[in-house]
Image (cartoon, rainbow, N blue to C red):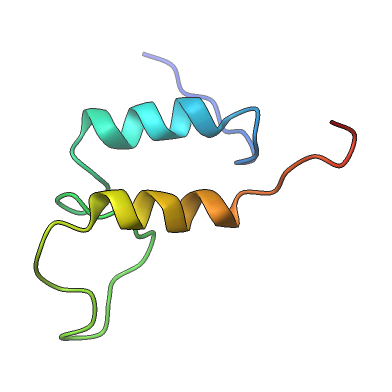
Amino acid sequence: MSFSVKPLDETSWADFAALVERHNGVWGGCWCMAFHAKGNGAGGNRAVEDKRGMRRLVPIRADR
């Protein structure tokens, strides 16, 4: 098995999204990349909202 590390940008977004979706989110359906403070963000299925939020953080190349 091999792994590769790439910056997360518009060219790698589809691979990242597929990986997260294949495993039902990073943390049980959540797309967050860090733990929430107790009580914040807990409960409910927020996968769609979290995915949109994460996508807004991904840089878009200026040359497109």
